[in-house]
Image 1: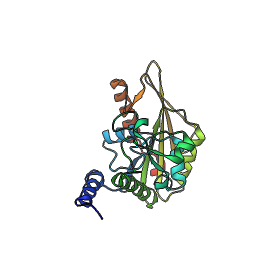
Image 2: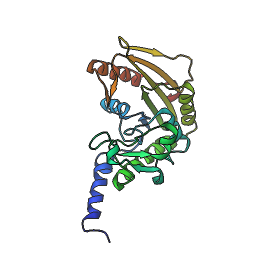
Image 3: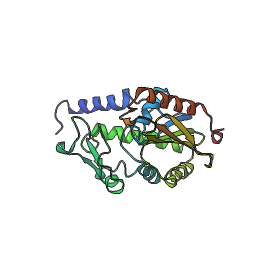
Image 4: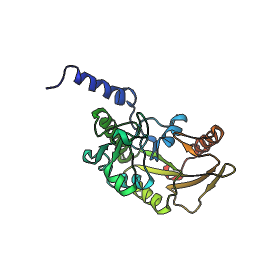
Length: 243
């Protein structure tokens, strides 16, 4: 039997996670984060480009994991048999490192995927995850839709992994362009190097920066502001593949 108030509590949580925060839906033109953590989504939100929440906005991932998600249309990501609550003793702090994914732990060494949510144990968190998957599927599968997809990581990423992601995006019904930002911390100054030998659906920028990523930002506020401006300038560019 359902405890009194339990349904209302769950519906209230769903409202907070889905209705109030994420009521907006994909449109004819979308900016979508493909990870690899919340930093990319945070910059898009700062620039008022991120209009709705996707599944890779707010989790810990890797380019190879994003490739796998696109390859199986996010089926494994939302497979509840793969979701696992991280025991309290293994967490890195109160309220963080809450959930892992068995498959991505095995294939990519990710000890934590869900930092602030636990879709294995919390129905509202699971609904939030599946709503994000529904939205990105809608954006990718609606003919005539133009999508700017963004990925940023400080982990070294082989070119063939990013090209595989671009191939998978190219197989969807929408028109898609991927901008990949490879962060290289530890340099004396801020520099941007552009790869020029890529296909028209893919742009690769190597961003060399003095400071390291810390959560949603670079450690040095000046470096972080410069990174935001680099992405702002990129967003203004209209890829030829999008007309």
